[in-house]
Length: 441
View 1: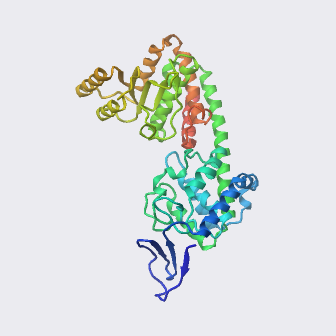
View 2: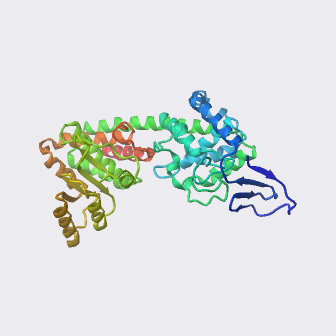
View 3: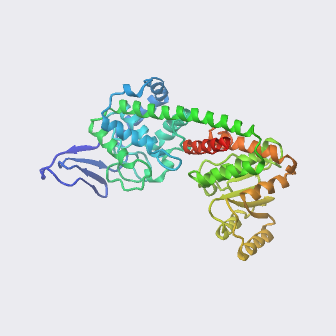
């Protein structure tokens, strides 16, 4: 394991990390050092890793969670430690903080079960890089921690695991000198690691506190989500006209955080309504979990319809805040190579910027591919779809059903079709606020 030794140096010095070809050395203010050697895992590290696998595979995490105290106040932690954990939980938003919170849970689990294991060393194995006393945190996470967090709705992390956040996978130990641009409560997380490694924080108590905080947060979300669905039904019972409903959803998309993702949700929820009404010519593909899923999964667009053979026949990309899409058209031409969907296009949140070069490029791609291409504002796209599906006569009912589907996705009620992993707390609160204003008139 990592070794600590004392040297005859001045009592106080600036803490630092020295990086060598085959090791890193963490130096503290009192001159003490911890050495992290690189190389294939030692026999002791492999044994610790195997013990972790065995215990976690036997369901330790679920049992630990079931035995959490009813009140978080009963967990004995210092105010300083509780404040660090509070910062980690409170930093979780629709865009940042989830990976840091998930990694903190993973590290505390490791320290609970194997106190001798350093939680600064997240790589261990036969890959290109490994710490001698490290373990594969990525494997422990993807096999045990992320599934546990998703199962209990504690953190909506991508199913592939928290190490999909590349900034957490750099080949450096987790210390105060970890330079990667980690989004979230980075300083609180690193301070906590220092305290746990120094043995001044009881790791199991810290884990109890953190999981209880996330449990309480999840319960509050479910309460607010239920209220959001109730108030949606109340508002729709007042029979708002289609224009009012479309305007409200667009306002929510524009005014809430992470608008680009909400535009995707708005489009996909509308297509879900059409699919439920058997108005599509194929099957709607579930909404991708990742914002960069198009390139990663070789999709054509964010919203896709496929035929019985799984071939894309319709595809629409959401482009929030980008009315001028010449570069995107060039990318689309590359994506269409060897593919012949019936119709593809882009949907923007406001009027698109259709210049001559855009028209010429669209025409050129259509001529080369034989694919119908459109660039439409969201409201025009809605009308386009209704006309294309021959459903214009049912617009009022469809738009009402759209509002319900949109709200249900925000409230995590349609995860089989739209597995939205962003925490939707603020989205739900913003939706509630808009509806309350509407009902108050």
